[in-house]
Every structure is written in C-alpha cells, then in structure tokens.
Image (cartoon, rainbow, N blue to C red; front, side, top):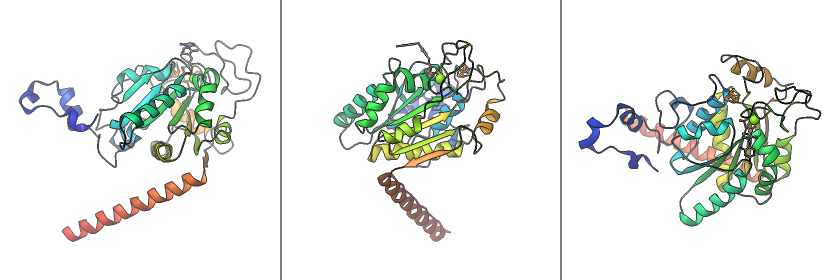
Length: 301
Ligand SMILES: Cc1ncc(C[n+]2csc(CCOP(=O)(O)OP(=O)(O)O)c2C)c(N)n1
Ligand code: SF4
Ligand SMILES: [Mg+2]
C-alpha cells in the first residue's frame, strides 16, 4: 500500500464521499517525520473504535499507528480480545490470528514477506493482550524470541482477560480480585520484561501509554531494531477501566499513578549492545539530515 495507490482520479473526485477525500488529502503515508502530532489531522489509520468509551487501549492504538515508521509496508498481527475489536477499523494491513498463535503467525509472515518482496522493507508488528501473550500464547511468544525472529511484539497489559469478562491472567497483580476470579490472584505478576530480555529480545520497554511522545519513541525504536537486529518487546499498561471500576475520564490518571518510580509500571528499559549501536547510528543520521535541511533553509532565506 502507498499513498500513490489511494490517489483519487480527478474525474471522480467530486463524487467521492467527503470522508474519502479527506482521507487521501491528509494521509501521512510516505511522510518521513509522521508521528503522534498528526493525530487529529489525519484519519487514515483509525477514526472510530468499538472499545468502551475512554478505554486506554484506544489511546494506545492511536499512538502506535501514528508512530509506525512505515505503515504502508507494515502488517500487524492481532489476537482475540479487546485489542482485536479495533483492527476492522484500522487502515494498516492486519491479520487476526487464533488466540495465542500471534507470534507463530508473525514468524511465518515476516519470513514470507522477505521472500516475496526481496530488497524491500516490510515490518511486522504483533499486538495482543496479556492473556494472549503471557498465558495461552507464551510458548509461541518465547519460541519466536529464541529463534530471533525479526519483528516487534507489543502486549497491551490490562492485567486480566477483559474481553471475556475479567478472568485472571499471568500479568494480573497478586491479590487482585476480578469479576470472574473471586478468590484473588495467588501469585505475583509474571516478570515478562525480564523473561523477554533473557529470551533474546534486543529492546524491551515496560511503560504506560500516558505520554504519546514516549510511545512514539519506543515504537519507532522497537520497529527499527527488529528490522535490523532481532526481536523486540513492548509491554504497555492499558488499564481496563471497566474492570477496575473507573469511569471514562479516569484512565489517564490511573496510568499516571501506576508509573510512579515505586509503582509496578515504573518505566523499565533494556537495550542490547548491537541495538544501542544501531540507535546511535540512526540518531547521528537524523542530526545530519536536520543540519542539512537547516543549511538549505538558510541559503534560501
Ligand atoms: C483459542 C481460544 N481460546 C479462548 C478464547 C476466548 N477468549 C477470547 S478473548 C479472551 C481473553 C483475552 O484476554 P487478553 O488477551 O488479555 O485481551 P483483553 O481482552 O484483555 O484485551 C479469551 C480467553 C478464544 N477466543 N479462542
Ligand atoms: S472491557 Fe476494558 S479493556 Fe475492554 S474495551 Fe472495555 S475498558 Fe477497554
Ligand atoms: Mg488483557
């Protein structure tokens, strides 16, 4: 997919729905410095969603889609759960996999894309809930990391199975009582970021989605590193406001409270040595480009 392919024929322009005209006019496909600041102007990626009003998963979706470095050449792999409700409304190629199979599907897909499109960059990004990632899909998740598959795994951690009414997940906090888990969780939250690091991920971040600029940075880093070096993992706290008894306006505060340095979603990051080197090179190139653009602008003035 590229912006070129959604150009409207001039003869038909007037009869195309205004939404479609708008989509084409403000598309960010192909724009190098696209990012979260385009949200609001561009509705190419997601305009509506069917999640609960104020669900932080919807914020997370918008930030991620706006931050993909190459959305026209990205395929996202989803899994059953609240996360999957948004995919039908997303203008990025996506595949719905059987619950838990997402990292196995993504492994095959990434390999097939590199054979089908040699010499062209195709990014694969898995996006699944904590139940899909750490419980039913853990085997497939770990095996993809062991094999050093070159794609990014993003987990929307809402600490339970939200879509089926609130069952216990491995990422649920110890002692938490959910609607369908009345006894309370008996063991600690699984330390998946640490497991990801030990399993071969080159870039691992745990954070909330309270800051769009941070999500932009970590998504870009994760995709670039997985493209060039190996697997990357992002664990994003997207609280299920319905299950924790918050209203639509309270999701953001819940995330801010949970990301304080002593809390369970304090920012955590791991970068392997080769990944550090790659990020340094990317940053040096960016600086060079900016300096050249500045010089050009000064000459023109
Ligand atoms: C193979 C299979 N097993 C179980 C289910 C039932 N199921 C659907 S959604 C879901 C829970 C999803 O939880 P999570 O991955 O945490 O996503 P969330 O809804 O919390 O975003 C389950 C168990 C299913 N659809 N398919
Ligand atoms: S049930 Fe929870 S996770 Fe699912 S859409 Fe509603 S608030 Fe979001
Ligand atoms: Mg969940």
